[in-house]
Image (spheres, rainbow, N blue to C red):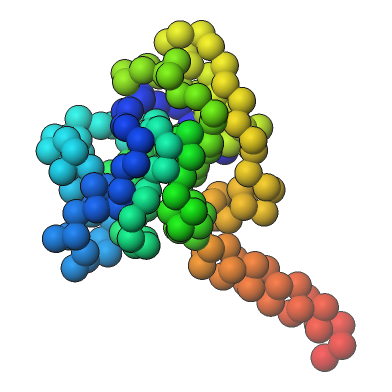
Length: 176
């Protein structure tokens, strides 16, 4: 998976309440949640971004309570990928489950808000097109990449189940 977009940079310890305030947890509609993504940090965030843009953050991104609404709001806002120095463990797991592309790199200090990045999730490579500088992240395992590419864990499981049923059906044709 490849992404290209403008950087929106955030601090260390951005928590899930800042990603999507609790007052919006009464819906799971991606567009509605996306309209309120990061609004307690930047009230105009969802109006300023463009589809495909990229969030770059410091350490412990997504700390706080476990809520899939955070990942849904980021995807619903049109963000293609989140790059951070580290993710809160539960956020990382929920990101995979919800099909949100994520990468960890050791140092984000050379990436500035407004830079344009090209990200290759499969290779774990990040190219800062503005600064002509490359970064290397440890690529996610292939099956995790497949889950993200499928749109999340449930879609991945459903896709595998459908594929398996088709194979079983083809195998049974000669028997029945």
